[in-house]
Length: 598
Image (cartoon, rainbow, N blue to C red; front, side, top):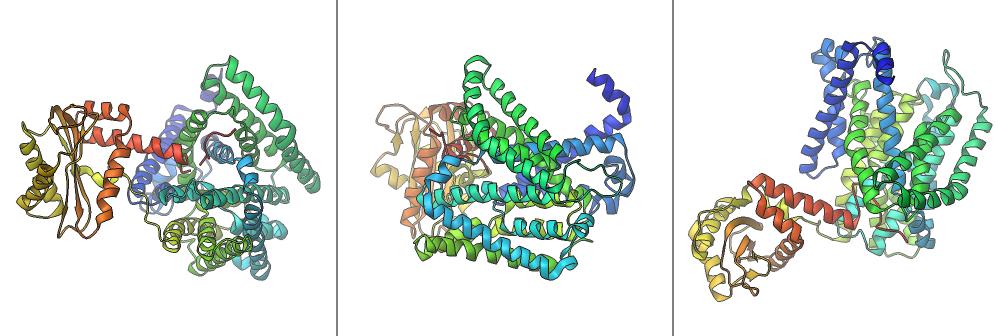
């Protein structure tokens, strides 16, 4: 029935174009996202860049006919059913993305932080909100009101305040994980404050949408402004009390009688979509209903971490890239770029957020150093700020220029938060074994029948990477091995040496299928051998590399998969997966849960 209906609404050409457009959005967004991730930057930067490439900024300029054929309705031409189908998928993407964000909010963890969390969160919301409202009132139209913003200046004013006070929970969690602060008291305080900040921010945005009048030719929601606000707050109160209690009990039944995890995931999506449909009917965007449903569901300990992770992976790797790429389809980032507006929004928002959260932390009797770390951590807006701006633009509340400024604000604060926290706390970033290893650092079954042959081969390979004479490296490694064998249990070995003239640590990993005798305590031959070279001027580097090696190969399954790898790429893929799994057990995803709740 559904296929017949779709065929009647969309012709073969329309369906082909729709599927190709979504494939291009997803494929290019994922590709560019992975590239920027490899450079140590947030993936959302690459995902937005994909939309800029496929949108009017680039493709629309060099190939307007191709752009209009692939994305009809993105420009001046109308596209009927094809445009409706594309916009529907993008709306669904935004809705499910906010479900994933809501699932990350752990209300019990928020309240456990007590007065310090309330102080940081209250200051972090109130002062930037006041700064944004003041900015909107003083500058008005110059700031970038949209068509609805001109008709409802009070809604625009509140939106600017909310936009400048929002915080990106996923970005913050990733920063804390990279700095080894995820489970510290400081890290938990920042995450809890960001959670409460997000909840208040999205409630504020729901109120903004409720204040918007219908445009000429649009159907009104049928509810008055105050009726809509009242129903929205009633929905929020119901979901956080009775709804939360009810879903907690229903999840027990679903876990016991339905297939797992499929049945639980289907229930979560059902609740989220019904809630999203209700808030859309109210005249508030569907994303608010999905977010609140996620918060209510996520607070139940019956929703297992594996289920959360499955939902997170599905949403953030399929729907999120399409949504963020779609931003560039509607906006010409060159024509809409206003340097003065971008600079003004960035300075007011970043300065206000950092200083206000710093003040809140100091009021909670935190040290000066930790208070600055809290301020810079809470300043990151990331994907959350971009979602907020995009939805406001779709609602015609803000102009293209202001949306571009919000996008630059979100990306800029996300880029500087981590380095700023690292600087004030004087903590080195957390490194990973497979990233240090690199593409050139893996040898698969090198022809080395003896221990000396293997170390010579590995030393020469490491010397090429390090730019040192091969014999100098081998002599140092062999001298160290002759003093004491470096074999470890479970078929591992870590020959190592400290060298003059080495600027940074070098790792070379050899997978030896037949095994080499390193005189290990358990008598096993070494089949995974890692040569570690560290600068003589940095004694701590060797300890760090040995620790990273032990962490990377701690699991028997990882060792087995590495031994089965057919080439260097497959072996690095195994290590990458193992590192990701380990990170998920610390603070999952880019995004964030805090472990099993009890």
